[in-house]
Length: 148
Image 1 (cartoon, rainbow, N blue to C red):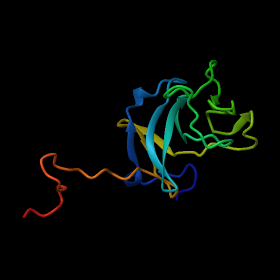
Image 2 (tube, rainbow, N blue to C red):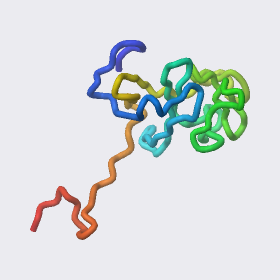
Image 3 (cartoon, helix red, strand yellow):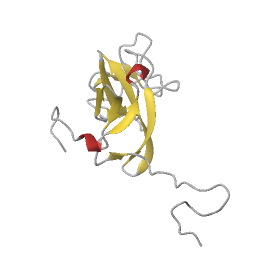
Image 4 (tube, rainbow, N blue to C red):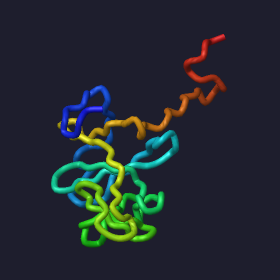
């Protein structure tokens, strides 16, 4: 894994969303991932002009943070606020800043942004969900099975 701030190989990155989908301190972009092999969600926000990404899981209680789909920030748009117990996190780096999360920090999902949009980098622990096999609706075979 590259050091923080080091360039990452483009082959490891996956397209996430168009840049304009992330409005400064606006609604988050939510997507499905696998975290330690289990289904989970992640989210991206634009904070201080930069796209940031986190696993959608509170440090205090392993529950999703958004209080409405894609809504992660408090009413003043200053902190990420857990919908369950009010744990508050600094959106720029995911560090707990109040509530029952102690010294915890949200799990960071590495993002980058270029002319093609926002991309995310799977890690050892957080991967894309397995692809659903494509099937022909007229048969029970998957497309990669041999023809009889």
